[in-house]
Image (cartoon, rainbow, N blue to C red; front, side, top):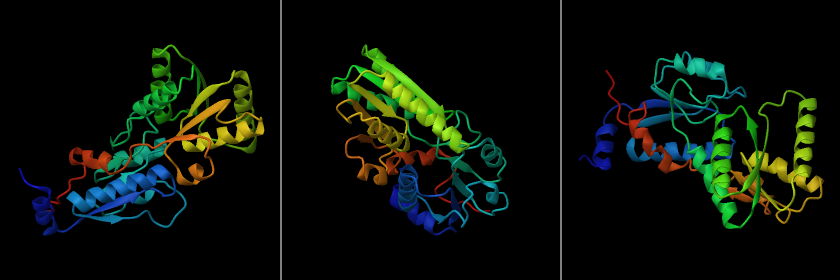
Length: 264
């Protein structure tokens, strides 16, 4: 068996492959993904990693004419999916916004994330639960399913609130806030609630504060992704880190981006 060191020495004698990180940074899970990709590239690949260009629009259309060897992307719209499927080089999607994107996808086990959150709360002897997520995002649906299934397997009861993943106007946002307030008022404390992401958990915590619901005595909250900005000012909640780091990207060995280039 060829050792990683020998594979790397052989790869370094060839021209590096140009691999694009074709997505905007800023979200905690994205930063963790980037760390995983770079760790894999340092250890096993001969890649020249290129960053997203200076633009606010995260569309993939800039990749259409790019003369590269591969790209990591975030497919969040049907248009992104169409563009990615028609690119002339290998593409790896790093999110689960859609159930069946048209390209190879490397993502976390979102159903297991939901199960892990449920197990954590069950161990603390809660008997009433809730799930607050985003309608239309596949990862949120998987986290919901894992959470609710585990709760019900143990005889617990779980209420679910899912809101639109896209806020089109201030009126939509106010409607979502009223939905959340009404839902929280309908629950009988103590209740343990899983939010689909840290951003949703932050909204939940702020709403609990506004309704004078004590966290964690009346409403216990667990979020996902371990966003450092949100975690820093939300010490009363529990945060579950999504497994998106270096270990996740060991699966790149069987993805579409080969570690050692074989240029013609």
